[in-house]
View 1 (cartoon, rainbow, N blue to C red):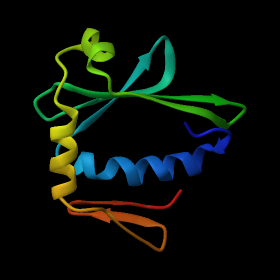
View 2: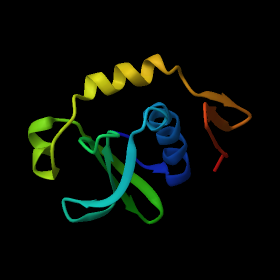
View 3: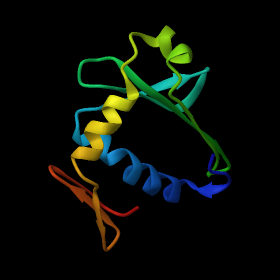
View 4: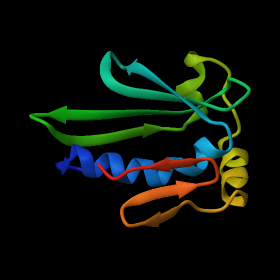
Length: 113
């Protein structure tokens, strides 16, 4: 877990970590998780659930990043995908490139925050 980091800095880390997943067709859906806003559900291109992520933000600062990949805990959100298969595919796609604060990869560029 990341604690007490600036929200912008946490967002930059998440972009770098999640960019390979987006390149292989993972969709990000804003959701409430455990009744909390500031969360997202990640689905593979076939619609199966990959991951749930929640940010605890207090006073403009991120307090905690919570990520759930356990299929037993995600099953109530729909059919769950094989997370390791998605990770292998993302790794084969190659890492994103970070230069001058920009994150780039095939088909996308994210500006610095």
